[in-house]
Image (cartoon, rainbow, N blue to C red; front, side, top):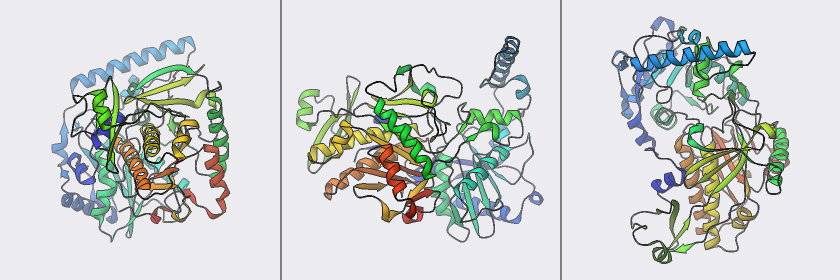
Length: 551
């Protein structure tokens, strides 16, 4: 087990992060958007009252709508128009030259659709009820797309019930997000309510149950820490940096290509969505959607990743470390230290304290938004790394970064699993020299997969350890998701050593999101799942989530 501070240092997460829902409440401030009672159903109004009472019981700050409004800074307005003017001029010039123009900035026409006047303070999220008009949606009142969310409560969408398949849920949610310009949709009827967010999750809860507990575990984490797709500015960029088919990379590239073809038969990776296919009401709303995705052109769900072999670092006992690095580096109350810009962690287990450098890790994976099982290696393959707490993004030879070319939403989770695999392998090698996992990591690397479904608990393969089921239901791309991945993996490995159980990998359960699994290779995992297809040991959606205790 390592501290939260050490975990954040390893992952390069510098902001204050709340891990427990009870802590997350401190970050949450909400206001209720004005509505006309005659324009919403009785069930929506009743649920709104239930939601408000749950917020009050939990201690969430509820701010009257009029008091939540602040003037839009003049500087921001001038900035909008300056960018719009420049963008319109560029569009005109490119049109004359016969070139395509696809800018992340709005033009003057799009800017004319922006609502003028006061807006909701940027640390406050909005709860809206029912249908609202174009130009007067809650989104039109947001000051910040990063720090505030819109939650829209509506009647249960037609055809949605406990047996609805994943793709129907997915399509329904995406259309509702675009139509209402909302981050989260809550659908209600007399007996139940459903929560949709960008995780493509669809938890259904009974109205008669204790809604306060469900709100605490499912909604509060999403309001406290909104989805934050990784931005290019967070990476060290290396364009045209590697050859996917050179002597080193070739077999790992082939594993992704062949694995993707095999995973296509498992139905675990559904077709994605293009922003152009979503029912936005005007071009300004479409631009907002694109900005929310950090200029990505669409969304696809799940990831295929291939961790490259890692040279495991030398381990020191704590006395050796103190002699080599000095007492000034190693603090008594810390389980990590930094020397010459390198991060070292200290593991205390089995009455022993050991110390080693956090290894650099590299992963071949696919860019955000591409079709995961029908990808084009020359266009969609990327290489990501984590070194000394810094993220690195490399493109293959012949490929420069273009508009819409972005890393996966789950990049930090992928990197957390990769560095966790290396750390775990080193710990296991020290305490169990004959165990196979360290040799697998060092000589062949492993695959890391994510899909939006869960294993039947009775079919989890021997040597794999589950963790994460009782964690808060956070959104993808959040720092919490990466922290849970790394912390859970290390704890699972230490527990396997404690009880003398084989450790071949882990299955990271993300409640109302999906599963992350480490395996020997993508091809091997696809064959394992296909070989058990008749028993449906995993499938899209929440079907097997109840096998795990998540509340």
